[in-house]
Image (cartoon, rainbow, N blue to C red; front, side, top):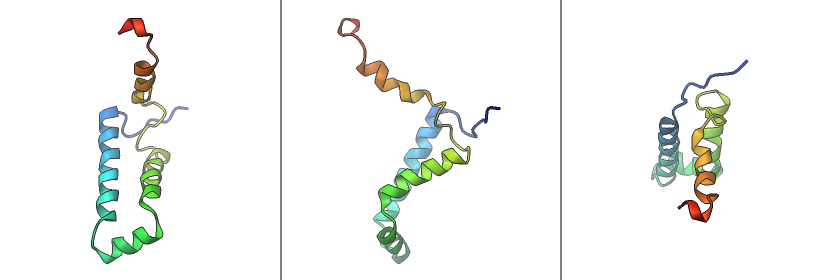
Amino acid sequence: MESQALITNDAVVLGLLLAILAFVFTTHSSKSTFWKRLCSIVPSILVCYFLPSVLATLGVIDGEGCSSTSWPHAICCQPAWSC
């Protein structure tokens, strides 16, 4: 049985991940005492990895069906004569 993720469009997934990064680093540099205290306990880089993995585990985004993971191979592994 295949599970269908809520968001399958690669552009929307990328936008969501960029929004998460913007939120994490904005709150990390915030002057609020709550965010300062939270960032002193939990490093921001850990949150940057944790939130997308939670979204993938809950089925909000599809990490395995993403077609954007194949582009580095397509660009870097081309023969020199195909350019």
